[in-house]
Length: 196
Image (tube, rainbow, N blue to C red):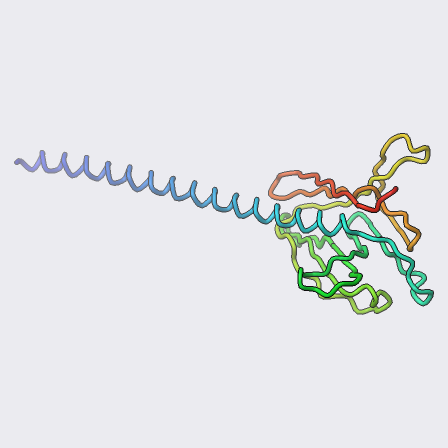
């Protein structure tokens, strides 16, 4: 075997190793991207299920006179607060709970949060807020709108905000407009007791 043959063999072997390393790196990169997409889909599904379950169970009740100015359902473009019969966990004691969802924009694009806070509804007049927990991270933009019948009851319209002080006027549904990693999502969250 001559030196020239050995150099040719080493060159071919080096090219094959380089090709294998690049292929393996590409496969690992695709595997990581797929894993990240799966995690994101699972986070989105969990977030949507939580929102659906809680918003669907929103209730309107007449608060005591001492809490007359308290809204049992209050929605703006970036926050949603309502009373529900579902506690923070399945083991929570029965009763009425006040749930608040808030969009907290980040300092840089794609670093915002959707947070959730749950506390007993009988503490509606207490000024100290419940501890907010992050529900969804990496939010680029978020907006709530509220579906109701128009004044003649002929078609559904989206309203930018909603308030109910215990009069039983809940929206038909809450619409969540969400931008996450360049994807625009629109979730329809029906309210069981909503009459619009």
